[in-house]
Amino acid sequence: MKHSQARNVVERSFGVLNMRFTILKCASYYPISTQCHIVTACCLVHDLIKREISIDPIEAEYMQGEQDNLHNVEVDDNCGTVGASNEWTAGKDALATAMFNNWLGNGGGLVGNI
Image (cartoon, rainbow, N blue to C red):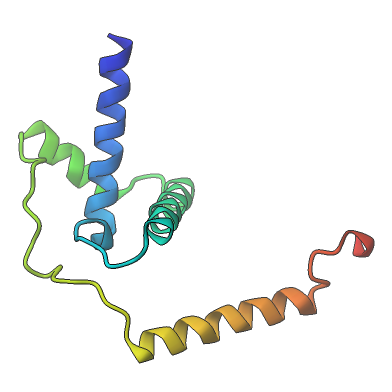
């Protein structure tokens, strides 16, 4: 019984993540280590959303589909393939640089600055 309950929680969690983050629906060209980071990041963002929004419309939609036995949704045609672009890479690098510079400007988290 406990194993079955745990399995249901895991399946529901993956279902909600797949509905929220379409990158998880498609095959990925990223290396396995990057794919692991993507899943972890999706889980962290999901947890942040759950903490900040008391009623999650995505989870409510998934639960309604589960009640209607519609939770086995096919991958939609909008997903296609995931690939990097020069614009995406430049934007990501600019954001990372800005965040790092902001972190350095705030003391860089050094213990001596506490």
